[in-house]
Image (cartoon, rainbow, N blue to C red; front, side):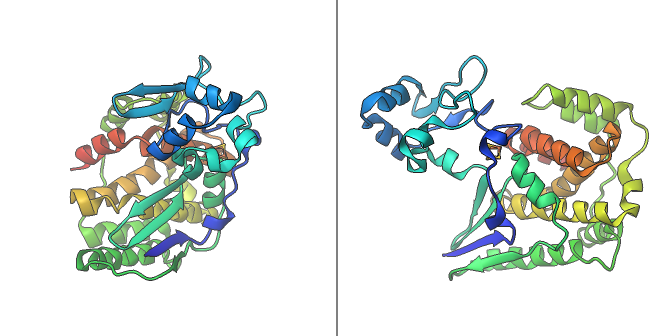
Length: 305
Ligand code: SF4
């Protein structure tokens, strides 16, 4: 089995109690079967507490969040009581993995860290070197996958061709795949406003975007924003093209990746605080609102068809 990771992957660190948007707040926490049986058989006070907070619907189990929408095991110092009492081995799969994502192929797994985590977003968007993919182990890709990886490799080459401006690179991708990216702003805002919501602050951002007349392209005269765009686009392509092997929406997923960058950049300039910290925050919000909701992604993919 081949394991592929971006070269920044090992540098990811969860900032835990220093995190401003702790992933143990507001997100439902699924409990996988193996961990459920472990919790069923855990003795002592922690075992009783674990069982007390498990909710069950059909075959699906999860931790009930408290009234403040916090995981019941997140203590007042924003540290995890399960880790403190039993160690990381007692976490459910989703808590062990998050914010890592995995894309599965026949004989390879591609892993990365998701932008919804502020620490991962900081790591990805502050990079100046071109992102490389590192491979470990052996594995055979199917013929269909080989074609997919070849095309994706070409896309990465174009995105990372720093002899061209980022606008030219995007133009090249669009012309290579014959893509139209001319999307009406009002239609787009209506679409984004109709999607499943995670944080009400997202509405304020969309309202600001609606009221702003200028678009983000003026920023791209600066090299540093071109590099941020490049890193963001590589991230989206790496993470979101895989699904096209199952849903045949390769073109729509390329468009989704470009559109995601455009939305994030436009939200950023409408807020008019042009620093990287603000950009990271908007990218994080976009990721929570759109990227981490399969339902929302599917609505956008349908729209892009
Ligand atoms: S969002 Fe990221 S940095 Fe924050 S607690 Fe979760 S994994 Fe850690």
